[in-house]
Image 1 (cartoon, rainbow, N blue to C red):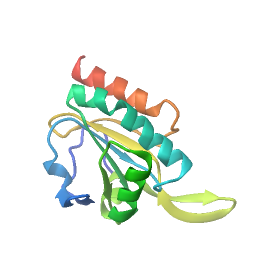
Image 2: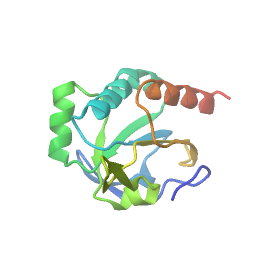
Image 3: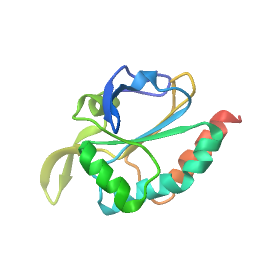
Image 4: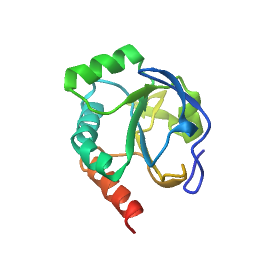
Length: 153
């Protein structure tokens, strides 16, 4: 499982324009994992990051959301809510590398799912900060503040 000080793993994600290697992403990066497109919490999180996308962009920080949903679902989700951030699909290996594919429990039923988590990488691809078991309200703002602090210590 990736920890602060580790570098971006050399794993492949499926983006809107096809597959890409995560380790080849340039510049600072906010990578966030979320459970499912078009659910209340995930929609709010994507909308919050979209609202702050110009602020992240002004800092030179790229944003990328990842879930198991298909590229088709991502396109519909993006169009429905006017999202301004790229979304990628992973069928497990990337989530496992980040330790976000975990056993969950709801109403006594156990199942595997995505732990809502966010990772902030510097321009060299080193993990600077992580947030696990994220609560959505105020989260995007906290990540932006950490990005500002990282770039302007």
